[in-house]
Image (cartoon, rainbow, N blue to C red; front, side):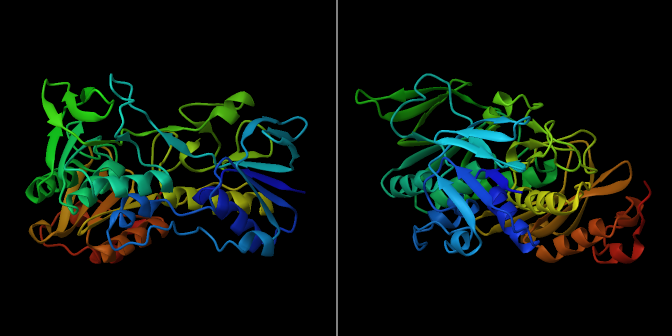
Length: 411
């Protein structure tokens, strides 16, 4: 037997690690178009931007892992398609045979398409090279415009502010991080951003980017007719799942690579995990795609278990985090705009948790500078218990009391 993993991000490398930890002795090959040693991506928009942070990407595993555990890393090599019948993968350098294939191909930043999008000084943030370039730039510029108020955009905006830059954020939605946060948390953060000096312009997108005669960005023109000076423009407008290999191979695609509850694609012995996979979960009514390091890591561990032991449903609780200056934001579960919320803690002191209820049942929680609350919530979810809205109805309730009041979940 042999396993070929496409992608060297968190999901791909964790798959190799988990297979070896589980006793898998057959050959493992990791194929990646990247040439760098696999590294951690979350710090790129956070700690990496600090002046006192060593500008060297943190490796996902010790470089010796590959030789010590007989894992072949094919750097600078891209996969083109999979032949499920012959169990062969065609790459830029030849053909690889497999017994199991894992697509951990991730996602790529969505690019601006407006006039001037190709101006010098317009960037996205995905790789260590991107982060290194932006870190040099923010030390040399005065005006930065961030397009998109998602997690990457806001993490970078907060980091840039600490370098003394004037920071403007344009966001088409009515609130930042709207897909992932409750309106309460979004609004609270928006107020803090503005207090700290970030100019937040919501429901306002980019119309064009103005260039000087040398092709360098000098300003962003918005959809509402405003002009914002910009020496540097950073686009954080979401990502597009990397489905090219899956599409070339005839796999089922539905806003990503479609998998079943065991993370199997429509082709036998071919799996997909991470940012590019659309999977069923008890935390959402329909299959979804999650852009999260933790999700990629959890799915990698699970797919390794499936390869070793056979099919089993993936039921991990989704959780996420974001560090934005002094604010440590942690989220468990999947929220919707119409969820009913209860708040525990003290928002005025910047330490609180928002509980989200749907159909009278706790479905998610967001904590700001309250890691203990997240521990409690994950304990509740992992124990397969139910917390009702009535349990959290009192204005002075304590989150830890919910553990005692929780009831077994019913299917």
